Length: 416
Image 1 (cartoon, one colour):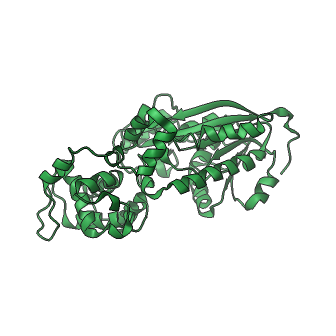
Image 2 (cartoon, one colour):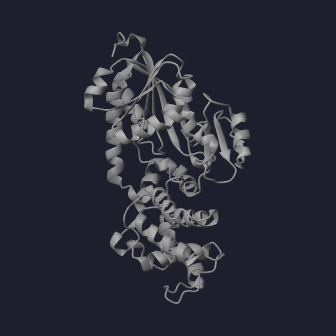
Image 3 (spheres, helix red, strand yellow):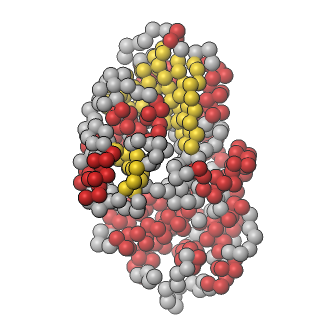
């Protein structure tokens, strides 16, 4: 397979943006597509595949390229020449011939394949930082090796049917008419899986609000909250609103759904998505410090806390996160999670329910947070159910959710 020179140049430049500029791969790819609107589907696929696979296996390809392992994460040592060598190692291990270019650094196929047979540490072979391998071993024990391997498998693309406008069968037919083949996902009634990765955002079905792109595991969270039409629900870490829109659909667009976040730009995106989906019960409101929570104390029938987390459960989808995370950042996040759970749980009315959720696989971000909360507030709260999903057991992302019920004796519901 021949790679056009202009495409290879863009790949090397974009990898530099990811590793030297510390930008996220999906955004780098998105901007490249905007700059090169004349690229065909083949060029787009080759470009995106090269970026994601080099990012996913960065440390391994760095080793195969014959570069010093201790320098793989040092920005000053990630030069264009070395980026080319890493890409070449990726290209060779996928059975492809390197382009004939006398000006390019020499990378010999036999050297790359010879290194691939050498014994190396599990962290190098799995292309993860040493600290992550140590933390995974510490927190997950014998479960970690299988998880470590699964996190490097490319993720499938899942769609969530917007039941306010259609059902799963109707959506499959509509997408089929536009050339997108899908299949129903077992045990997730709202989900379809794309049989072949494709850009569905330009489809008539998407523009008409018939579906959202959302991992099948993520689609389990809104039903787990058990929202009902007419209720007052708060999504307190709403972000771009994927789960809020799902909750609104389960409420049949009846009641009130307050979407909160500390980032105004994310709420602006939520408003656009809600309009497209035909949802009008959502009020998007920026969090204004502790005052927002105090005003909402004991007002909600349901509260969803999809808290900021390490994202280690979705590395298949966002592989560059492992190169941008650090132990200190995870420690900061676990502190923040505990603070959010402690503070935002006050918004649940007596007799109401709360769901604490993350897209992490680490117990320190998941069940240990809930256990610590219940150790302090067990007289007022009851753990009803927990969900664990990990990628080695199927095609889904990894996540955790716990549903807690507030005792009805907790006092009188407040009015906002």
